[in-house]
Image 1 (cartoon, helix red, strand yellow):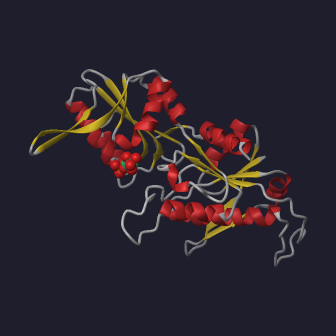
Image 2 (image 1 turned 180 degrees about the vertical axis):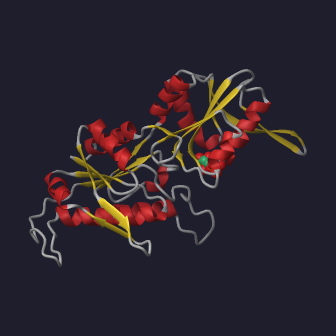
Image 3 (image 1 turned 45 degrees about the horizontal axis):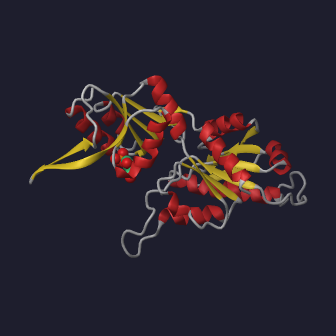
Length: 311
Ligand code: R5P
C-alpha cells in the first residue's frame, strides 16, 4: 500500500509510512488567491496510487482541511477508476479501473466536540463530517476521537486508534510522574490507560463543596503534596481546563505539574497561558505546533492495521 498526504499532515504521513514500511507520496495542495483550495495528484504519483490501495493522511481541521480532504479523496477515486481525461490532453485520458481501496486516516478530526444534539435543531457535526467522508472513501481511521460513539453505524468500516501508549512512554521517560490525573470525568478512560501502561497511581479531579460559596477541585482519593503530576486529556484548546486543574493541584501541594494530550489545538494564546500554570506541555504530532513532541505515526499505524485486518 502507499501513504499520501496533502498540505496539512505531511510529516505525520511520512512517520506512518516509515512505521508501515510503505512508500509516501506528497500530493499537490495549494490555495488560489481568493483562498479556495486546489489539489492535484502529480503525474509521478498517479501510477503509485493505482498500483496499490492508498492511505490518505489528512486533517479535517480547520474548515479548509475538510474541503482539502474531500477534494483529495475525490481525485484519488477518479484516478483509481481511470478517469484521467483533461483539457490539456496530458497522458492517457482513460485507464481501466483498479477498483476501490482508499482509506483516510485522520489525525485530528475537526468538529469532534459537537458529538450530540444538545438543543433542538442543531447539527450533530461530528457525525455530519463522518458521513461526508464515508461517501468518498472505503475506510476511516480516527485518532483519539473525542466521542467515538459519534461515528457508530457509518456505511464503511471505521477504526479508532489512540496515542495513550506513546504518551505513557514519553511521560515516563521525560518526567517520571508520581501520578496520572484526568482533569475531569470525561478523560478518565484515556488517562487511566496511561497510568496503567506505566504502573502509576491514577485519579481524576472532582468538585468538592467546601461551603455554600466555595467549590474546589481535588484529586479524588489522592494526596498530591510533594508529588509530580501529569494531567492527561484528549485535547487542549484554550488551555482553560488544564490551567484550572494545575492551579488546584499546586494549591494542594503538587511540586510539578505537566499536561499531556493527543491534540494540541492551542487556540487564542494557549501556549503562553499554559506556560504560567504548568511545567511542561506534551502533545502528539496530530497537529503541527511547538509542543508536538510525540509522533502519532505508531498509533496511526495500529489503526490502519486494525482496519485492514477487519476488512
Ligand atoms: C473536553 O471535554 C475536552 O476533553 C477537553 O478537556 C477540552 O476540550 C479542553 O478545552 P480547553 O483547553 O479549552 O479547556
